[in-house]
Every structure is written in structure tokens, then in C-alpha cells.
Image (cartoon, helix red, strand yellow):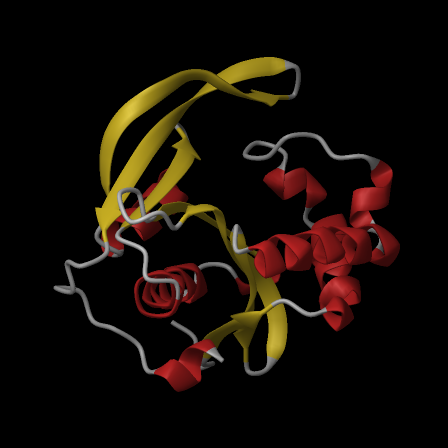
Length: 188
């Protein structure tokens, strides 16, 4: 376990270069879990365009895109997407990644916990959802540690390396505050 402190904050245009560097270096490591991306995705310019789209979605109220920080350095992302704020729905999906140079230090679990706090406290959501590739056991452990439970399998839900893969679907009711919450200073 690292002694570095994990925080999250809203993504900024200035994060493009750091994110692009991580994504370019880790492209092979993430290939098992993520769809193929065009070459521009791995450049600062491509990430700047992506960040612009994410911030537009944030302005529209459909996403909360964040970066994960350790000792003030960007080491990954956590994104709340597909926000449905209607009173009878109030749910969203959450996804995350941590750069390989910062993995296995608890950052993913802490970042997800902070994102759950944002979802409940700042966004007023009731339900968090996530999905993982059936073989992605590390991500499944992160979800379990943060109070998620599996509730189904989505057959042929994601195309990876030319093959359709099933996904395990996860849920967490956010009003269940049995797990420790984080201070607002950790998520700013």
C-alpha cells in the first residue's frame, strides 16, 4: 500500500497531456478490457477533444468526469456517465482506470469510493451501476470492496479485439452508507 494520498477532481483541459501519456504507455495493458481506439486517442490533442466532450456532458448534467490524483499527479480517471437525475430514476454508471505505474496501491478502490460520494452527495443519485469483463477480477474486487453486488450478465455487450464479450453487471444503492465515506477535501 502506498503512502500517497488518493484524490479525485473534475477533469480539466490541462489534464490532456498526462492522460495521453498514460494511455499511450498502457495501450497494450488495457487492450483486454477496452475497445480499440484510433491513434489520435493516444495523443494530447485527441485527449483534449475527448475532455472537451466530457466537459460538455458535465455542463449538460449527463456526466461527472474526474481525474484520479496521487500526490497531486494525474494517475487515472473516474467517470460517472449516463446520469439519469429524474426523481424516479436517479442513477448513473461509473467507470475508472488507473495507470499501470500506479496500480496495486489501492488508488482504484479509494477513487471509486470518492466517486460514490460525489454521486450521492453532489449529484443526488440513488443508484450506481458498473460493468466489468467477466475475466477482469481486479476490477471486480474493487467494486465488491465498495459495496457493489453483481446482478446479471450482459451477453455479447462489448467488442474487444474483434470478438464480442460478455459483461458482468454491478449495482450499489447509494443511500446505504455502511461503507466509510470520504471527506470533501479528498474529492476536490
